[in-house]
Image (cartoon, rainbow, N blue to C red; front, top):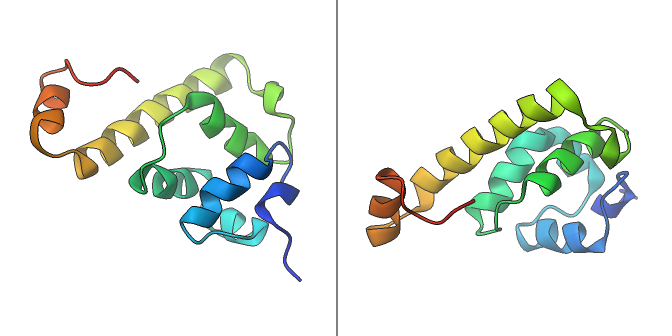
Length: 109
């Protein structure tokens, strides 16, 4: 039997529910996708971007405590997060929201 998403270190029932909404129900599925693709799928499904959740997912897949992410590693993940959010936002934004994001006055993230 496969382990649930919440079997991954740092990930609890709330994260498990978010993944279940998009059909990801096992820790193995998250591992196979990797942190970036798993998070991308959450964003594409409408999850609100949250940097802590993003780096916690990275730490979980490495079996590390969530608060182990510091310094240059955290800064690099922040850059990746911002790029991922921008990329997904450009794919999913429509109408006025897309225009506002393009000129830099859209929703703050």
